[in-house]
Every structure is written in C-alpha cells, then in structure tokens.
Length: 459
Length: 61
Image (cartoon, rainbow over all chains, first blue to last red; front, top):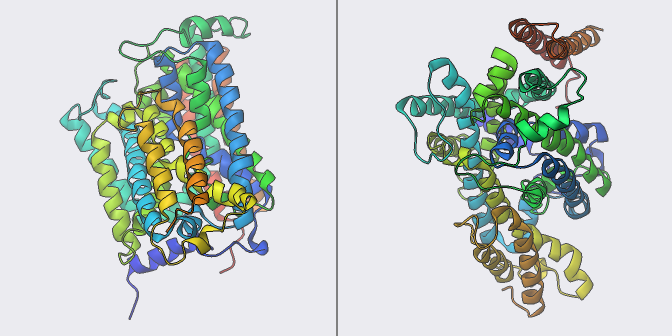
C-alpha cells in the first residue's frame, strides 16, 4: 500500500528520536560542540522576552537580580551535571523508556498525559507571545497583566490564526522548522543584546557606562513592584533560575539529550545555555520593558528596541519555541493513544495549544506556570534517581524485577502523587511560594519511594 | 569554498546588526537609521546563514 504524505512525515519524525527504545551505542555519541550549540540555542527563546520583563514588574532590585541569577544558574548547571547526566550516561535511555521499566507502563502513560498537557500550555503561551508582535501591526492591544480571559475579538482571531498556522507547520514541516530554528539562534541572541543596548540611552545611561549601575537600580530593577504584582527578592530569583527547568534536570527529561554524551561531565555544557539565555537575555528583556514604561508586551518591547526586526524576532521566537514544544507534546500524548498516527496526535495537541493561547492567563502568569511544570514533573525524576543511585546501595531488588508484569509500580505512583498533592499545585503560592516547591517535592518523592520500596511496596 | 564564503557573509551580517546598535548607543546613528541597518543585517543574515547551512554535509541515510 502506498504511504500517505502524513505517514511518510510521521516516519521521518520518528527518525528524529533515534534509539528511543534502546540504549544509544558508543558509535552514536555526540561531540562537545554539538552539546554547546544545542544548549546555547535552546535557552534563548520566546520565554526569555517574558521572564526577564516580569522580574522588573515584580520589583526585583538590581543586586538581588544579579546575585540571584548567578546562584540559581550555577545550581541549575550542577543539577544537570550531577543528577541528570550521570543517569543518562549510565542507562543511555530516555526517561520515558526508563520510566516504563521502573514505574510500569501504566505510570508511564499517566506521566506522559500530564507532560503532554503541560507542554500544550507552554506552547500556547508561546503563541500568545507571538501574537503580541502581530497585534502591533493590527492595533490589537496586549492583554492586561491580570487578564485571564481573551481581552478582545482581535486577540482571539490573531492567536487562533497563529496557533492554527503553527500546528499545520509543526505537522508538515517539523524537520525544516528545526533547521530554521538553528539558523535563528545566533541572531535571536543578538536581538536581545542589541535591543537592550539601543534602549540604554533612553534610560539615561552614558556612553562610557559610568552610571549604568545607578540607572539599573533607579530606573530598571528599582525594587518596586508594578501594581498588583508580588515583590520578588534574591531567593525568588535564585529559586526560579534554578528550577524553571526543573522538569529537565531534576525531572530527568533531559536524559533524552544527555544519553548521547560521552561522559557525565557534558552536563556542564548546560552552562552555555544558562548564562547567555537565563542571565544575559533575561537582563536584556528587563532593560527593554523598563524602556517601554513597564508595559508587558513583548512585541512592543522588541519593536521599540530593534524595529521591524525586533517584532519579527518575537514572532519567530514564539514560532520556533512552540514548534518543538508541540512536537514533544504530541510525542507524549501518543504514548496514551499509541494506535493514532503522529500527525493526528500533533493536530490534537495543536488544537489544545491554540485554545489555550486565546486565554492570556498562562502567558501573564508564565513564571508560576513554569514553576508548577517543574513541580509536577520533578518528583518522577526523584523516583528514577533513587532507583539508580540509592536503592542498589541499600541492597533493594531493582524495580524491573520487583514489578515485572505489573502495570503500575505502586511505590512510584504513591511517591509522585503524595509529593505533588502536598505541594498544592492548584494554589501556586500556598503554603510556600511556587518557585520554592519543586525541591521539597523532589526530596519528599525520593524519600517516600525509598521507604516504600524498602518496605516491599511496588506490586 | 562557497560554504565558507556564505558563512563569512553571515557572520558579517551579524556584525552589521551589532555595530548598528553600538553606533546608535554612541549617538552616531539616529533611532530610525539604527533600525533600518539592523533590518538589513537581519535579512542578510537569514539569506547567507540559510545558504551556508543548506550546503552542509549531508547525513548518511
């Protein structure tokens, strides 16, 4: 029977996830340069336009920002290097495949469903960010900071059109778009640097930079939050910088990338993503939002900073970030419906993304959303970490043997559910701030899993 | 050879973008001139970088 274009495309997309069900062989390992490029490109994205700007609106002081970002980013790099990379290199498998063995196929399905839905939300936020750039051209205002529902018909139409276009392109041209994203990376980083630099004279910075720190403290990171926004300090920034990618390092989803590393030390390459992206780019977007009178409108910020090229950068950043995000969401959701072709799953993920993008609440509460994302995903990483690094030393039988033939490893399911429920994801700032939750949840899940497995719970 | 040339031109495009921002910061370019120059550099970057990447070594099937 001849293959349909969609079937051919799905087969091509499957090839992108090489060795997804088997260990990566020694001959397929990647060079350091490849990891450097990968991390550098992945962490200068559309989210950076929003995150750095929100720090300004949350009244972070300049000193708290700089020190918090240094500490948080170092902790993130250490998490990649000492938690995610060693397991990735030891098993050379993806988390999904490892989780199937450790947690059972039932738990893997539940995990993938949650992961896929959360990724749709994130892709939806990227569509919203891109919509602020298109909205500029049509006079559609960006939603208010506290907006939950669509702010206007124009906003709905723009997000719907962008979401639909991105979904179709993710189905039809995923591979080409991935290549296009590679082309965009260096330029995108330059838009942040050049855009911020060009805005500095308007803020009063002298050409010799002699008053930069004074302007930074009095006009950019003033320590005074915008109306209705919580005040953030050092610990908020350090925690967020560490844990905004908790799903990737503590949650181990970056095993997918690091299993191609020759040694665990390649986890340190994540510093090339953290410091340009989660330090410089965040600071640059802070400068940009300060220069547009603290209006949370990435499209406007970038347009004022770099003209048409800036607005284009926001649109492209949203697009190139949403593309792999949609693909990952599709992959995760496909685990729940394995008989569906990849294009159909991506289409459904895209529809969900498009609907989410009409509601600006995730875009306007992106920081809380990313923290919640980490909170939901990190505990599963603790389970796999405990299974590999701690239980063998305690002489506990490996999960593969202990739960052989069982759909759900009850110890893993209880550890995940209890740690997440205690952390209260539906109330982001209760009992502690959302940014602080992933670490105690990760530790709790790990301890619970060890105790339960030692007690013989599993089957 | 062509790949090298396109890579060099792509890098030069980024230098053009960045130099426009630096010159604007120093007051040597007006806001409009800076944005025009940045846009030209951007277009040039996408043309040359795409050309350079498309000439990369093909993966074995």
